[in-house]
Amino acid sequence: MEDGSEFSQSVAQIVQRLRGSSLHSQLERQAKDCLHRPEIKLESLKEDVRNFLKTSGWEKKLQNAVYRELHVSVYLGSAAETPSRLPLISPQLPTCRPKAPAEHLKEPLAYMRKAQASWEKRVLKSLNSMSTELEVPLARKRPAAEQKELANKWNEMGTDEPDLSRFRPVYAPKDFLEVLISLRNPNHDSCEDVSTRSHWGLIQVPLNVRDVPQLRKAYSELSLSMGQLGIDDVGNIHPDLFEGDYVHVGKKVVAEQDSAAAQQYSRRGCPTGLRADLWALILNSTNQPQDVMHYEQLKAGVIQHGLLVDNLVYKDVKLTASNDDYYFVFEDFLYQVLLCFSRDTAVLEHFKYNSATPPKSFVHGELQRTAFVLFFFAVHLFETSACCPNRPDCCLCSVPRG
Image (cartoon, rainbow, N blue to C red; front, side, top):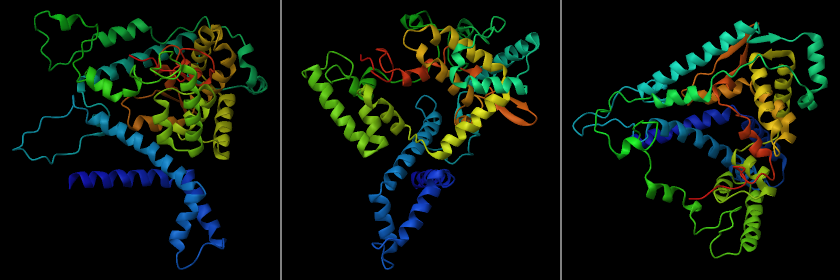
C-alpha cells in the first residue's frame, strides 16, 4: 500500500512539472488542431486524438519528457535511500515516522552537510575578499559604451586580451583536497589498529559502495568481451565490421527518437557523426523558438550586466582551452555559453535535489547567479567534450573499459 502511494505521488509530481512546460501547451494545440481532420470521429473522439498524437510523433516526445523527469525523481530518491544511509528500523517499531526535512533528503549525513556549509562559507569569503581588494563589485551594470563594444565582438570574444593578472583562483585544488581528507564520520570508530584498509587512500569516509561483481553487473557493456566504439579490442568482431554495424544501429535509434534507447545505445560509445543527435536525444534537448528567445534574453543579460565571476571564466578558458590543440577552436563558444548560463536562474532548479547552495548577487533587485565559483578548475572542459569531434580521450566519444 505504501509503495502504491509513493508511486501515485511520483506520477502526480511528474504531471505537475510537465503541465507547466512548453510541451504541454504544444500537445494541447496539436490536439485542438486535429479536431478538424476528417479521420477524427465524434463517437471515438478520445481514441482518435490519441492515435493522431501517436502517429504524428507527439506521444514519443511525451515519453521522452517523462523519461527525463523520472531521472530527476530517481536521483532525488536515491540520494535519500542509498543502502549506506538507510536507517535501521526494528520490526517491532512502527514504520510511520515524520517526513524528513528537504535538506536531509538532499544529503542525509549531518557531518557532510556541516562540511559542505563550511566549504561554501569559505568560498564566499574568498570571493567577497577578492571583490573588496580589487574594488570590483560582484555585479554591476555595464556603461553604454561597454555594452556596445561587447555586443559587437560577441562572436569573437577570444580575440580580447583583458588583464586578468589581479584575479586569483577562488580556491586552490590543494585546499579542496585537504577538506576531503579531513572528513570524518563521528559515529565511526577510528581508533582501530593500523590495517591494510587504512592505506587504501587519503579520503577515509566509510560509505557503502558497490563491490567489483556489482560494478561488473551495472556496467556490463564495458566488459572486455563486448565491443566498445573507439577501442581496438572488440572481441571476436573485426573493428571495421563492428563500427559499421554499430553506426547503422545508431542511425535507427536516432530515427526512432527514443531517449531511453539512445541512453542504452550510448553505453557502448557514441559514433562521432551521431554524437550531437544522440546526446540531444538523451537529454531531451530541443531547439524550439522559445529556447532561442531564452538564450537571447540571457545574452542581453551578459551585455547589460557584468559579474565578478566573468573574469574568472575568462581566466579559466584562457589558461586551458585556448592553449589546447583540440579545444582552442571552441574558445568563443565557451565564453558565450558559460557567460550566458552563469546568469540563468532556471539552473537553480537543480538545487531542489542537490544540497549545494549557490551564491547569488543582485543588481537593482534582479537576481544574478554566480554559481560557477563553486565548481572546480577547468569546468568548461566538460562542455568542450560535447564539441570536440576528434579528441581521442573525449568522454563522449569513447569510454575506457576495465
